Image 1: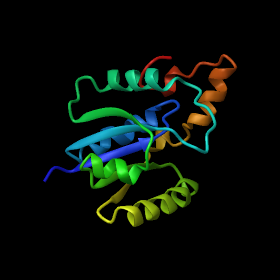
Image 2: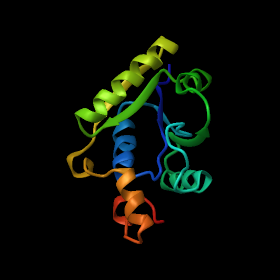
Image 3: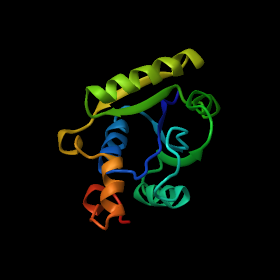
Image 4: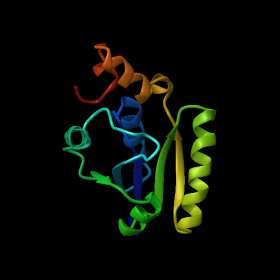
Length: 151
């Protein structure tokens, strides 16, 4: 049986930290689906979602084990419909763990075949934060050094 993982997130933007998790996840999973979701807690996206999807696809154009989709559903439901039994998540710190732990337990309740696998972000990427990058970009600062593609 193929080990398929969903890597869900708003990815606004998709950072080198996210890329690090995908690359390392490929050592564990046969296939990774990067799933760009609409986060109801975030009112509006900063970067347009279809453009973000295309930029991420370009990063993995030579990596057929990685696909990129946009979804607007429960992640546990997406996993079922994608035949994925794993969620891949990156953790930068204990604050991330506290947040992700609750989500993981709810996803497991909603889909008892779904396991969440946490990878600790590589130290050189642990300070990269999409919220900070959006703010820097909004005021004209450079952010391309923190992304696997140019904006």
